[in-house]
Image (cartoon, rainbow, N blue to C red):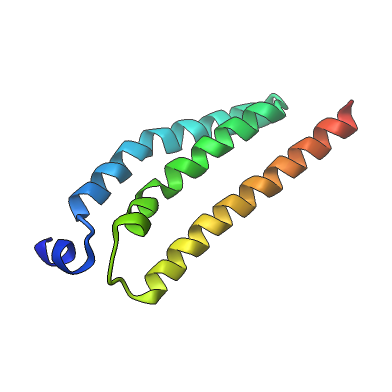
Length: 104
């Protein structure tokens, strides 16, 4: 643990705490997304999708902001995870808006 702190500037304990704090939000937002989809409430899907995205990437944001001397591929993986999450959220928003527009 001391090696990770000294060499990379990332405290694994802090990463774990952030991860464990975000887990309840992750699962609750997943539950709310499924419930909103079942009831065809597009705006709720958007809100809970955003919470889901934030809960998913929170520990990696910590590494991104506070990590140093990390291999380039670590930054690449973090960027891909965050980018894919944002892309998925935007796609879901567009699909929800299209479904809401056609239902009206």
